[in-house]
Length: 456
Image 1 (cartoon, rainbow, N blue to C red):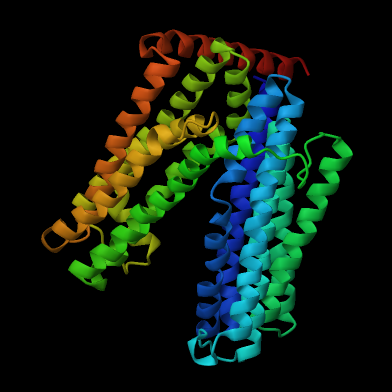
Image 2: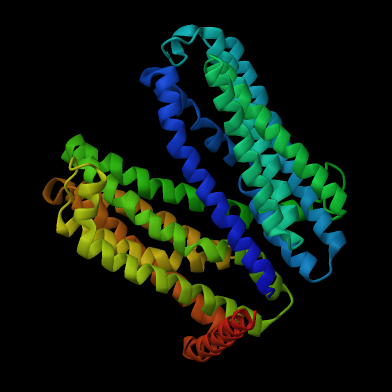
């Protein structure tokens, strides 16, 4: 476990999150003021499509990245090359499929079934459909290249290039918007920004001579077959999360009316801040964890498990307490006194934030070794049950019902993930001694840094 690599990875990941948040905040006023709310609303609907289409690779890029990381750690470079080429073949088929489908739809769809967006002609909408499909295909290829960087212990570099790509995409979008162009050219701007990022990533990987560049030659049907299970499990996780987050909102609106939705959505959005913070370390740690597992480094595995668990708990516990005690006031101020949340709603959301803030980072370590099938099915079933529970209790409990359902899901997932950790990385009874060791090392490092600074 390299402290320097982890520190660089955490820093790059934090910068990426900050940039993404700033872009989201800036795009709303820029696009709304230049395009108007109606055209901006149409754009918002259209731009959900690439994220959905990018799932067309069925999770193969993610599963291949983990497999490559573990193979490289064991010195199996030829096997890792076969893995990336096998995944490349699947991704290529998915890319060609969605682009061809988009072109066909753009050519044959009747004008009356295409989304009607003010100040946007029929041909412009057809152009946007094709451009966004190509954009989604490029996202999938970039995912393969990110796997190359992560598997060769260059997580920080790959993340930094991804951040630069995002800045380029939205920089081009803002430029064409200011020049007076509409949705079609805006979609083309995103596509060109992603293409430029892909070219930079490819050139960087080639210069580094990783030996793991994606390609269509040298794949293996056996490897593709072996990747199916972890790939589908990896894909099931974001689908389950979407069902839990969006399905409960739809269920609440159905049984309690739209008026009950804003308070729950505001409280849920606030709770996600703690979740994002608690995962800052574990995302950067995943390649290191996969490598340590592949090398049979049990001491390194135990130290990283305890580090993730301790960091997540240190963030989740006080954050949940703040939500429970001051959540209603925070939401009231944040919404400029438009949204009022009850104490019961915030208490349930606090429970979700507490247990979700711990199990989610820990589950990322399972993803890092392609063991996501150990919790993906349970998460999917629990997410579906949360929607049913919201439908059953929404009329009686209002917006507290989906918050309660989310809290129960996170409690159950906490048990599932911690049982796996205890069985595979435990026992839990030893974690306290590992934690004491890490704390002692941290204090020693801090003392040396302070002493050096005083001498300087």
